[in-house]
Length: 163
Image (cartoon, rainbow, N blue to C red; front, top):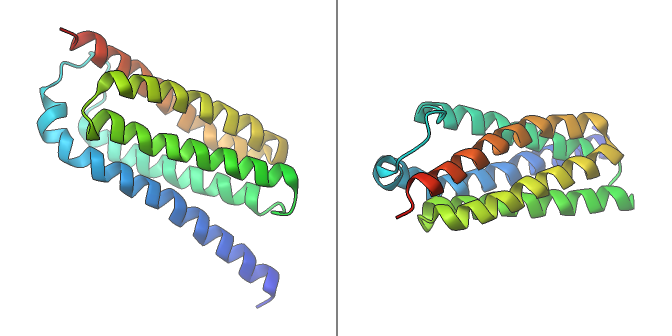
C-alpha cells in the first residue's frame, strides 16, 4: 500500500474518531439528564420524540466526519484547508459545550447563548468548507438544519420554563 493511501486512511479514521469523541462527550452530559431533569421540563409541541435524537445525531456526526475528511484530504498543506479544519474544530468544541451547558449544567438559558454561537459557527464552517470542497460543505447542511430546530426548541424551553 502506498504512503498516500495510508495517509488517506489515517485522515479518515482520525476524522471519524474526532467526531465520535465529541459525540461521546456530549452524550456523557446528555444521557443521564434525559429521564430526569429534561423529562421534567415543559417543551413545545414540535419537540421530536426522545428516541429520534440518538439516530439523528449519529447520522449527523458521521456526516460531519465525512465532511471533515473530504476537506482534509484535499491537501492539508494548503492554508485554506488548515483554516477550515480549525474552524470546524472550534464549532465541534462549541457543540460539546452546548451539551454541557444545557444538559450538564441544566441551564437552558446558557444553552441558548451557546447554541446561537453553535449555529453561527456551523454557518462559518459551511462557508469555509465551501471554498475547499462544495460536497464537504453540503454534508454540513443537515447539521445546520437540525441545529436550527434545536435552537427553536432551546428557546422554547427557556420561555416555557421561565418563572
